[in-house]
Amino acid sequence: MIIMAERGAHLSQLLLDSSRPSIFELVAQEGLNQALRGTIKFFFRVCANHYPETLGVTFRWANEIQLVFDCLLQSYYLRNHGASFAENFYGLERVTKNDCRLNGKAKLCSLISLSVLPYALLKLDAYFSKRQPSTQQHPVMSFSSIRFIYDLIVLINWMLYTWGKSVTHSPVLHLLGVKLKHGGENSSPGISLTKIIEMSAFFIQFLEWWFTNQSSQAKSMLSLPIPPPPHSVVQNQNSKPRTGACPLCQQQWKNECVLRVSGYVFCYRCILPYLKENSKCPISKLPATPSDLIRIFANAE
Image (cartoon, rainbow, N blue to C red):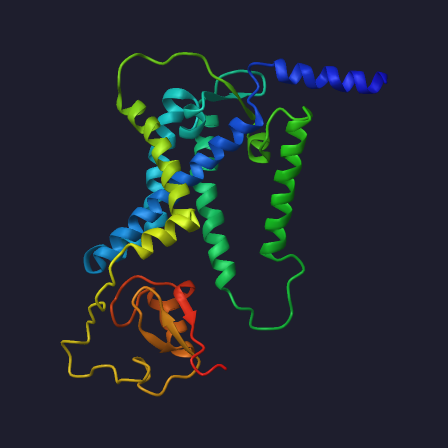
């Protein structure tokens, strides 16, 4: 009974600590950062689909453009508010574990962890997911295993923060010697560019929900008219794709699959290496990836 009373008093003290962010605030600010990155990439994908000749190359560099934008945005907020964009939006700020404000070096390290680290993890995930081992021997510690261990450490850190055993919820913040707390009320009256950006965060989260909602996607797709066939760059050439044949090898389809961004049907062994090398449809030149391929079971019973 004494141990239970001590634990209850400890939890009550955590709840009464006004400077300590709640789990819901921390989850919300991390979700806002992810929604912002996803919205920027979605914007470039829409532009590339509508204007493939002029803006198609921008989608291939969408991650790099997003990195530059993220660095500029987070640098501005770290320099002026001592917090990231999402942290400042939810009234949080970064301080050292001794409740001191961040110096220049700490802000630089925070900027790297907020912008460069997610970009590096994204590139590593994409690289190792496409990499095909040439031999049957597997390394002792693969990238997926390292990523699993990292995610496990993050989960344990969240649990320790919930139980009050850690001052920070993230192992990255722990390595930087930084924690989050509720900031002071230092906002100035009036409408500024900063306030406009912060209020648009609600719209960004709404867009993320809308484009990941299955029912809204189905409703919007059904309400659209049937589109015309995509423009083919080979229409102005003498060699047009043969009817009933793969446009790449000009032979009868084998393991046929359709590229959903354009609707053309190819042999799987022909289109897969082409997409990995060029990242676009060979006929319509629309940006595409191997994940846009859909298997066709034309002769299946």
